[in-house]
Length: 220
Image (cartoon, rainbow, N blue to C red; front, side, top):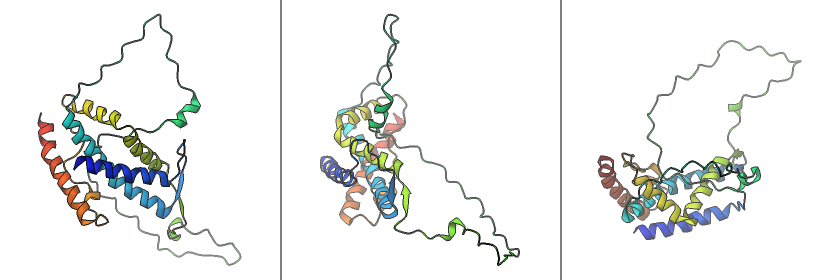
């Protein structure tokens, strides 16, 4: 089941990555509103799934000891040369193998009441510009999407270099007293009605296995 889910997720993620035609630099800073919403939904669907698959595959292979710290350079050796500034834009972002800790829920502050005083307007003066909230969202709106594009590139990099990420996950499991890289609670995307019944059942079975393993890992 793990191998089937991995191959299926890789096929869908690579197709999604190819549909944006990112090229070498991955430069796609803006997207239409519906396209951006679809990309955000797909990332919320695949990111937790890929982390859990990496976690299960790393457990099958066994944990590795953490990487040893690099020793200091010798006095005779030269200083480390930094990469050219132009190469910074060609680097692929790395996928985050560990989920961030669960945030505490904070209540929103009360909404500020609108002014109710009389508003005087002179007919010989131009009308003031409308407030930002007056404009309703339109499908033709162009919104910033660079963080989402970077996350998509990082997600696609997992399937281009799976051994790198599996090894990184194995080293993460080998860190003493480190929390589990995945959480035991079910991600919201796993329960989404946008998924088919069969997919929700498969994701539920996968999450049940994760929920049984995480407490034992945290207690070790």
